[in-house]
Image 1 (cartoon, one colour):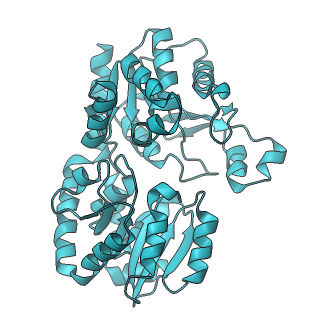
Image 2: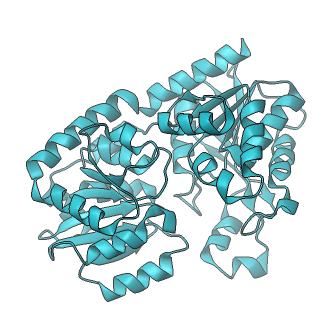
Image 3: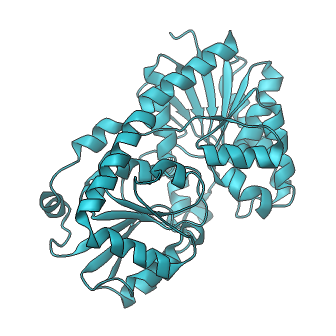
Length: 393
């Protein structure tokens, strides 16, 4: 039994019903448990009774998510909570998370409480830490700083309360730390989540072999997007770029989300240029990255996108908007940056990558070195556990 028991509050954790949501949480949780921490993750799932679960596959996945599970040495609890689109204030989602998490400990107290994202999980973590008189860590991931304070009434005040109330505040990139400092006056410690390098390296293979493995055409240049299908991910700009790229270029879009119907219609009209593959088990993503000429992420805002780190670990060229922690990750010559919300600039940048394979190989090798040195999840987990122990001491 470990001498260090830690409670995580997170918005999602993968399950057989949903293998994608919260994948970066799982990656870090497994690495933390390998450091000898007794880790319990509480990831509440929206309550979806029979009539609701039949309306949309997402609600069916919620219903099928196991309430308790053991992921290696990580104990996962998925209690049900009342949730609805927009999270109206009267739902008090932070209070719900707090009550559900407290109920899973049955009178015991962890040594450290760690909330992922400022609201509502960071709010709940701060309250639990105060209630139990335990140190609290909150990790800021991106949208909780870049979008929510401006998008919701009282959002900035909630962020301020979380940052002021936590014992230690972490940010996944320097850009996010700087933005937090501007909004709250407190600078977080920069600590990326990291990625598990071994499975990514194992999936690397020659491009022709990788294409044959996944069934993609060998005579096309493949541009791949992986992520949630949201307007803020720049997918409308990517769809517009499909018409401007050379005829041999083919855009593959992997994921699901609110723009799925719109993108499906766009893909139907551009079947020779744009294909929507839907959600794919994360375990298969490395094979698809290996079959790509370039990975693209034209987001309007980001923290530190995991898919770019994964592509970097595999030596795949990347094109991304110059937002959030992306310029910090790519540096001067680890990939290609373009302005957000600009289909023409996005198109031109993708063309530069496809037209110069030697430069693409050089930059992707630079990014691969950066990822190996700074984004190995086990190295980052060791730093996080050292922080836990210092707070307890």
